[in-house]
Each structure stands twice: as C-alpha cells, then as structure tokens.
Image (cartoon, rainbow, N blue to C red; front, side):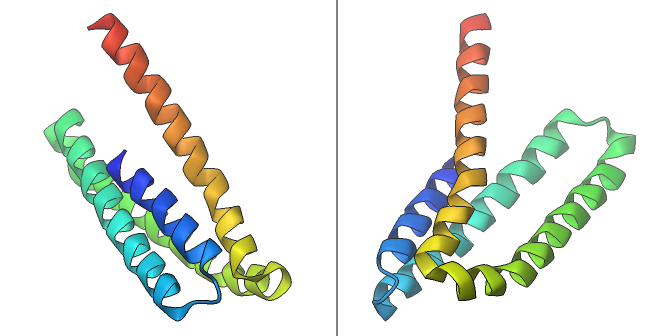
Length: 115
C-alpha cells in the first residue's frame, strides 16, 4: 500500500507541476521510489504465501508481467503525452493506481474484521 500511496503523490506532484522542471523531477523520483516499494512488497508477499516448489515459477511470471506492463506503458505514454500533455498522462496513470488503492483498502478492512 505504501508504494501505491507514493504513486499518488508522484502523480499529483508531477502532473500539477508539469511546467516546473524541479516538480517533475521530484515526481519522477517518487515514481521510482513507489515502483520499488510496490515491487519489494509484492515479491515478499509471493515469497510468504507460495509453496516452496512454486515460488520460482510464480516470481518469474510476476517479473515478466511487470516488465511487459512497463514496456507497454512506456510505449503508449509518448502518444498519450503528445495528445493530452503531462497532466493528462498523470491523470491516465492515476486510474489504475486508484483502483489498486481502493481494492487494497477494502481487502485490509475485510481481513481486519475477520481477525
């Protein structure tokens, strides 16, 4: 969840500060920090929940999926940037981040109620 919250902060700073090089730089730094936090948390969750004989295959699939999603995002971001500017690109990125934050919060609430 920390990674997703850092993403939200990065999107807000870079998106609304699109004409200020310093704010865009801070936003991009936070984007990398959020990506790292989310990746480490996801890898730790996989390692904790999977049986030993499945860990390597599932982690490999997870890494491949993440890298393909990153490549796809990088490929289409130029077109989005050209058509709706940096704020639009950040707004488009906010949608999946918001979905993950909402689902994570709901799952956490359900887990806390059953515990």
